[in-house]
Image (cartoon, rainbow, N blue to C red; front, top):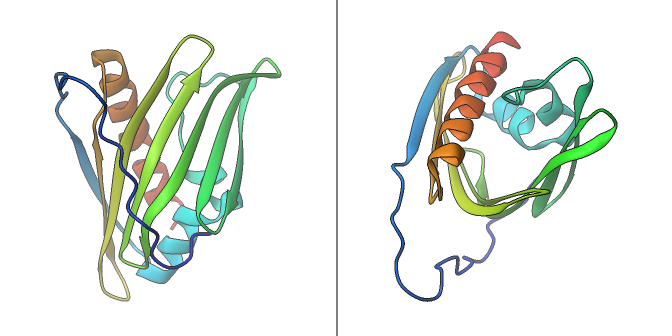
Length: 158
């Protein structure tokens, strides 16, 4: 689980500016309070329950590890690591999570940023995700699917 507010990291690429793919923005209304959702979004054991990986098969599973300022998500397929995602929290408060999102497969690496906002009252909270700085059409489509599926699964848990 993240704690406090952390320093801003410089994530700007060196050299010429590349084409930026459109941001992904999606949201869902969940019948839960912000504190409960905050824990669900940041505690490793809970992250494993709501994250929904596109293209997962019966022989795949997630393993999530976290510390106060970072997390790691490993996706296994046929008992081998298919990909890993690591993140470092830039901001970590009950209503706002902002973190780096570094995805690594055997063939590619990508770096991007994620902002999750929790807005609501005691009975209902809107969870909004904005994912920026994606570097390819394939990444954009995959992450759009990831966030839409994961937020629907998150809503179904409450």
